[in-house]
Length: 237
Image (tube, rainbow, N blue to C red):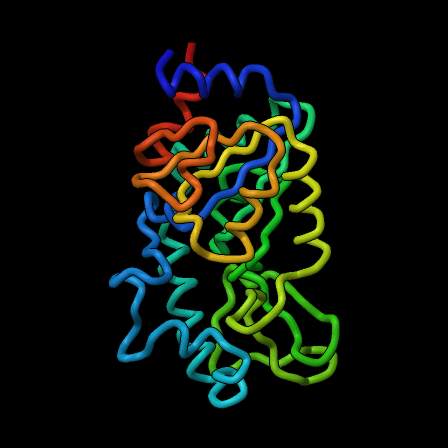
């Protein structure tokens, strides 16, 4: 039995599925990975802009970078990997899509049960109160302010040094713990705590990536290639 045949067998027998996706699946849609050369902006490192300290120091610069990123992401389209996951969700009893990506491509592909552990780049939220909104078509002349309390709005993503959203993270852990199959697609499995979810699974794990990861020796099936090619093949006879 080939690795792909084994993976199809696991998929066919699973009604409770959890999927973890990373930057690789979005890179196939033309979105540069966060740490890749194409992801750099001007002379700044992303790590120097995606922090609470950077925002406090220069909110206008941080917003300029995020508006640039939104424009770049807005031109991208979901690929066959995103679409395959959205279709899979409709076929099984329980499905949890845990993503490290903030680009919203899973939403646009039709996925609904999404756990965004690093937030959503299209969300803007208040730094002082509970106000938040989706801003897909917004254009700002300077840092935006909350319409309710006048405090600054910030991008609704998790920055370096911040905690993951507790409810989303707890739900992701339960999904991995309770699933019958975990699929890990397009992630290097080096960014924590997200990568730690893989080791929590008691179920078989299918890994889809262009190269080996630290978890490769422990997974049930390792498929080498891009998610857009391999994810649709999981459902072929």
